[in-house]
Amino acid sequence: MFKVKITKHSSALPSLNKGFTLLELLVVLFIMILGFSIIGINLSSGDASAAIKVAARDMVSALRYTRGQALISHQQATITINLSQNSYTVSDRTKEYAIPKAIALTVVTAQSELSGDGLANIRFFPDGSSTGGRITLEHAKVASEININWLTGQIKLSDTDASK
Image (cartoon, rainbow, N blue to C red):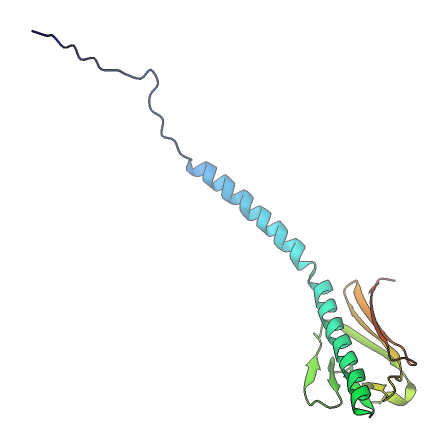
């Protein structure tokens, strides 16, 4: 009869548990949290710039709308800026548009368009011209300037350095 010899193969190395230790996982989590916090700080520093740009673009849009209404209706149209409330209204609308309180607002316009109540008007005429002026929005070291040409009524937005 046949003899069968069975041998047991043993590995020279003990089997290692393939995985991560708790310490390694904690180090990786710490590095990830540190990275996300740095990204968060960098993103929050752009908040002032973003707030200025949004407010300035909204105001430019309102100015262009007001000019368009004057051209279409063949009547004067105004945008009234309330400096004490940091807001503005368009002549044919009842809604008051707010500008964040952190943004400093200054207006240069015709003397006849200023009132002692902190109100300033930019008036557009049926031919497209306007009283003209400049609106400056500032926060921290970021500023935007809106220039309104009195002859053509053209509205131009530009970013400026508020520290100058």
